[in-house]
Length: 144
Image (cartoon, rainbow, N blue to C red):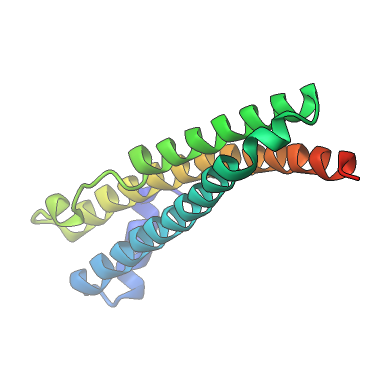
């Protein structure tokens, strides 16, 4: 569905109440921010754990070293993408204009850009976290 069609549907759903429609798009943007913040919190945990046990994991094997470094780099990339693509500040009120439909289309475009950035960030995070878990598994398999 095109943004224009979605914007028309939102306006219709909100009984042509531009403020209600605006608030609906605003709440979707808030959801994206919340999800990005959760991912950043998880990234912080990965980085913190690496600080405590990274050297022990890296001593396990070459696979563990490559996995933990690759995982950490992907988690950091995910955090950077979330900050730059989702948490980058632009107020939805900056899109307000005389036509509610145009405002909604611009708001939906902003939402879609941020959603794409979050999806890429999540892909990097999941891949990085999987590599990180592989490195930890190496440590646990070697431990006696």
